[in-house]
Image (tube, rainbow, N blue to C red):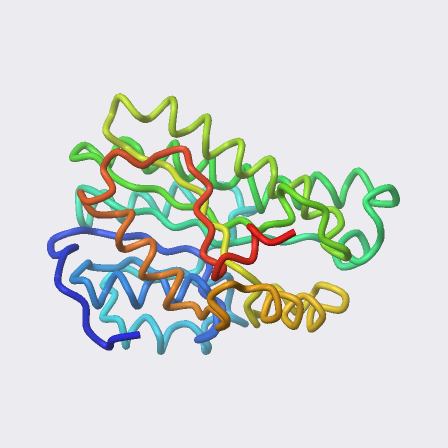
Amino acid sequence: MSESFHPVLAGRKALVVGIANEHSIAYGCAKAFRMAGAELAVTWLNEKARPYVEPLAEELAAPITGALDVTEPGALEALFERIRSGWGKLHILVHSIAFAPKADLQGGLIDCSVEGFATAMDISCHSFIRMARLAAPLMSEGGAMFAMSYYGANRVVPNYNMMGPVKAALEASCRYLAYELGPRRIRVNAISPGPLKTRAASGLKHFELLLNEAAQKAPIGEPIDIMDVGATCVYLATSYAQRITGETVYVDGGVHIVA
């Protein structure tokens, strides 16, 4: 991937939620946005994550940074108030967070607990809806919203378990938000990357098998990386993609088309 993009996002303001370290998909998005000229707001989960993310935020020259735990009452509202007072507007939103209790994630769907399922749905799906509600008033010039999904939302992937239905709900939410926000010139798309070695993926049983299978099936014959995802989001955030909304966009080298 080239180390420089044309500044197609110059003057744009982007909020990226979900960076855990330099291997995160969210970091690939943030870096690509910055390379394309956007100004960034970047969050980390908590003080434990801060040492890994704050240096990346500094590297990206993000003027708005801080901790964000979407389960903490008022945390999202406080973040968007900082964006409103600091920028007065927003053009791009990336939601790249997901969580499920380990016992529920690594067991079969039939064995997941009510509490575990509700937690996974709240953090991985409903938090995007809450972000969209807060972001939309700041997107008076139109905008683009992205949520990260996975192939397991539409096909059964062994060991993806409970996250399959949760990601399916996330993709459906993107479609309904695209419908509701379309008249405001706000586009909403789900991005479905192929398997990547991220911290979140490490929680899946036998994740290496998914990686190996993807490498074998990909028509392009090469593994993807986080910058591939970022470059796709840059394109979708520009006017070149102004008629694309409500889609699930696969960035997987074509793995999803192979039976």
